[in-house]
Amino acid sequence: MTAREFILARIRAALADPDPGPDPGPDRDPDRNRDRDRDRDRAAEEPVARDYLRTHSPDDPAALLDLLHHNLADYRARVHRCTEAELPAVLARLLAERGSRTVAVPPGLPPAWLSATAVTAVPDDGTLTAARLDAVDSVVTGCALAIAETGTIVLDAGPGQGRRLLTLVPDHHLCVVRAPGQVVASVPLALPRLDPARPQTWISGPSATSDIELDRVEGVHGPRTLEVLLVEG
Image (cartoon, one colour):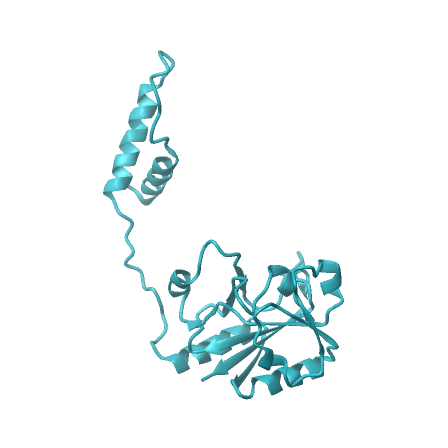
């Protein structure tokens, strides 16, 4: 059985009606039903091999953080590293350098994070529309986790992350990643930690696209500038 045949057999088995119901009469196709039953039995007998490597990185938190930093920067995100105590001052400095006057704040964001800035906070109480958010200069959020090998940040609308709209409309997104607790090595290690029922946003660098001439344009369907703060300790 080739890999192609195996994949198609599993698809047919998954789509097959487990209860075909009563015999509809002479129009019933016995060959089709026999093939369906054969495919279902064959797919059930041959489990999927999961002997692939789940990560290609060493089990070293410091090395993972360095790898995440490198891959985030490779995707043109601006990466900053600090401690928890330094975080409010760093956020205040980055907002000031940006010239931000307003910042969107999702529910559950730790108040201490913005305690050192005079920028006007715009709390999201669920009534912020895309038009109102378009007038907001920046947004600060946390994350669900970050994947070192792919330089990806995952948000799932949890506390301190807010609705997906918050991170798609403002032009400037500041995202806080706590290390080592929120840093994983690979996608296979990330998936078990995520709830598939939650609305997930996977971010690898600022929003960007390119036309047929390969001219890169940033900020087309999301923030033009992504700044990631890796908070250690």
